[in-house]
Length: 203
Image (cartoon, rainbow, N blue to C red):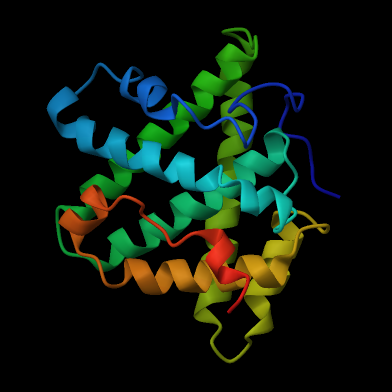
């Protein structure tokens, strides 16, 4: 059974079908290093939008609650971080900025859900463990080329046992292949960043 992330399904992120205004929210989050962070914030906005694609929740059966939206977002952030790690500098710095932006976005979700200043750090620590645990599991699964079922198992274990893990795995592989064609500038400007999940269903 998946552990709770500390909020009710009504808290944070908004419903998967309600993606309007994501960019506006994210652009308003950060007041540090505005010139450096602007393209990263814009990238995160597009990643968030991809993680809200309705087909993920309808055909892919990702739960449309806080945990499900967190899992979808983490999966898409992982794919971009994985590609950034393969690229030369300053890609590593961009990757760190993306992680920072992602956690600022998660923190905003907690605060909008009514979390107190005292509880927010504890919840962020808990969700941080979940985030890095997923990153490690997906990286290991993608690297296990001799075990094609490893990614399906990792997705079913982490996203939800009710999710269509095989379809999610096809989407992950299609997204990874697409990202492999992009350099740093391409990643920062691509819109959309990923192929649509719906297109993965027929592969």
